[in-house]
Length: 420
Ligand SMILES: [Zn+2]
Image (cartoon, protein in one colour):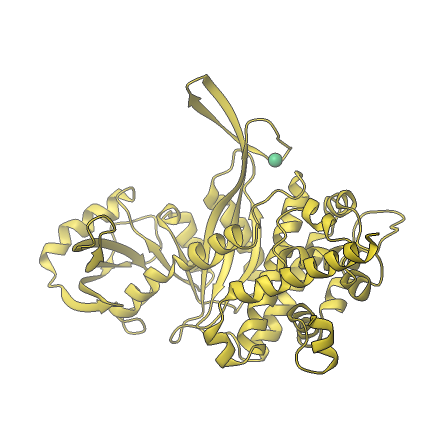
C-alpha cells in the first residue's frame, strides 16, 4: 500500500512533509528564505523555490545536482515549490549570485528560536563552540579564483593541486549540535587568520551563544587566544610539542605535581592539572595545562585478543579551576572531536556536503550555508519532533532514507504512469 493511502487514512504523514511543516511552523522557513535575494535582473524562477530545492537535495542526501534533476518528475516539487523543479544548470548558476548574508540570517533565526525554546543547553555551566578547518575539494585540473594550491611531488614529477578549505564554527550543546557559520580560507592565508575573520562575524551575530571556544593544536597561537580573551571568552585547545615554550615548561613541572586518578568513559586515567603558567609570554593571561594519560582495552581484529592501549592528551585552557574541574576539562577536551565526528564526517559521508555542486567560490559558500541550514533543521526535527521511543530505536540514517525513498518513489511513479 502506498504512503499516499496510508496518509489519507491519517496513519502517518511522509517524513519529508513533516520536516517541512515543522521547519515552517517553528522556524518560519518560507519567510526567512523568502528574504534571500540574488543578483539576477529578471528572475524567471523565484530564489525561494531554488533554495527550497537545495534543502531537499540535502535532506534526501541526493549528492549532486544531476541526481536532483533525475527526480524532477516527483509530484512533491509542484506541491512545495508551487512550480516545476529548475534545471541543474539554473540551480548551480543562481548559487553563484546568491545573497549569502541572507542565508546567514536564516541560520541565526533558527538558532534564536531554538535558544528561546530552551533547546540549546550547554555542558554544565558552559555554552561551547568548536572551530575547525576542513578541506572540501582537491583537483589537478579544475580550479577557480577561490582555489588554494600546493605543489605535490609525484612519480610523474611535481604537480600543482588545487583545493578549497573552509573554517566552520559549530555550537556543541548537550543534546544537539548546530553549524553556525563558515568562512573560506583565501589564497596565501593561514587557517587561523581565516578563523579570526569568521569569529569577528560570529561574535557580532551570536554575542552570547558560547563562553568557551575549543579547537585543535593548530590554533594554539597567541593572536588567537588573545583575541578570544579580549572578547571575554574562555579557550580550550589541544597542546602539542610545536608550542615549544609552554610545552617544555609543562614537561619540567609535571614531575613535581602529584597526578590524581580519574575516569573518562571506560578509561582509567591519571590526571595532572597545572595552573598559573606564564611561560607563554605573548598570551595576555596565565594559562592552565591539563594532561590525561588514559588506559583502555581494545579487542584486536586479527587475534580477537584484548590488548591494553594507552593514550596521552594535553590541553591548554583559560578555564579557572574553581569553575571547571579537571574531570570537566578532560571531558570537554575529548568533546572537541565532535566537530569531526558529528560535524564534518557526517556532513561529508551522509550529506555529501563536500561535493562541489558548482565550482565557484561564492556558490561553494552558498551551498555550504544551505547544507548547514538543512543539517540544523533536520537535527532539530529529530530531537524535538520525533517521539522519544522512536528516536531511541531508529538511527538518523533511517529517517534520511525515508526522505530519499519518498522522492525516488514519487519520481518512479511518474515514470511508470507514463510507460506505454
Ligand atoms: Zn576552486
